[in-house]
Image (cartoon, rainbow, N blue to C red):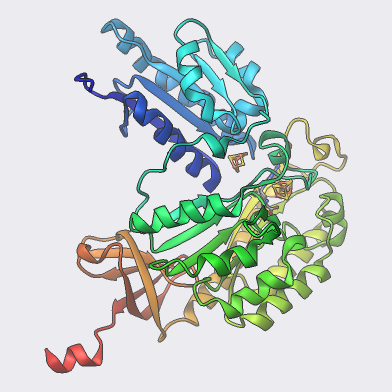
Length: 453
Ligand code: SAH
Ligand code: SF4
Ligand code: F3S
């Protein structure tokens, strides 16, 4: 056994849940090499910036973070140590060479599909600057160590990459081709997470419902089948999944929302835009009507399901009337939550060369109007849950002292006055108040408890 103090590892993460998952797995890989995670870069022996390339501000933030870290790196060198600075994730994949040229302080650049090779890269980095942005033939999931405890609400990556090539999106280039993990590996990981205390598992993928994994019976399982099987894991109370693509909402998955009580009544199904012309230019491969039909079908199986979406405003060629189509869809569908973004041209994507750029000022106006409407709808939908008693999984301390925070089945954030010892538990909560982005309530004391108290 080594008697040296652990080396300090600082990881900063941007982007989607897949990146959050990857960051945890990087920490899992480096732990046996003597690295323990800290939450400040000061005095760190290794810093990893796990980056996102989805919109342009993300890249700018990475470069300013590198600038800020340089002083820590110099301080470390002055005291005779070394701080290895690594840039990982989707910016690293897309712009590895640019980063190495522009930021001399960066020692290592690696993409989302090569981080399982970190131990070899660490050795190489002692003598040279390392770039590793290949798409290796071997599967990174096969060589990752056992994952660290994630607590009561855990994440599990089951699918990666994308073959859909929406014209605005970098994901097919940064994450590579669509790939599904084997069912056995997923079930094993899920059981370990539950053994470590997970009550809820969120299955992750850039297009999670495109999942088609090899099953032990020699067939291919889709997401609905996989979740039905996972629901049988003793101690697992809740299943979620994200992000889904409308084209991959198959009947089996929709029916699972009716038949499998562990699957939470929540679906994140990005629409992006309400106009058929824009959907076509985005290469989403469906119309607004197709989307309506899918939602009708989902609601047929699970009438109370809470829906969520992503929207892009100001895609090239978007007129006022196209934008009105988006607004009308938001009003019509009624989302319990939704994320909206201004279109940002990404280098190397087809939309970056399209005509009809929408001026920034108009994008700002449209975004403000859309967010306003989304907020109004959210509040309306949150209000409908007032008076209900819902099971809440508490995950962390709440907004105010004396409160704890959790999620309802509908994925609403809820703050409740309750002791911290209930964090990690599922409790019945009576919803008393609704806000735009959360609800509030009180823990329900059962009749039996009241009588015997
Ligand atoms: N696979 C998911 C989305 C993954 S990216 C899907 O197909 O729906 C997450 C979100 O970022 C997208 O839904 C989109 O709304 C937004 N986004 C992606 N590229 C963007 C760009 N170039 N400009 C603005 N928003 C973008
Ligand atoms: Fe990007 Fe489209 Fe793939 Fe989603 S489906 S990750 S938006 S290319
Ligand atoms: Fe960003 Fe890469 Fe995720 S671009 S959104 S971190 S897949």
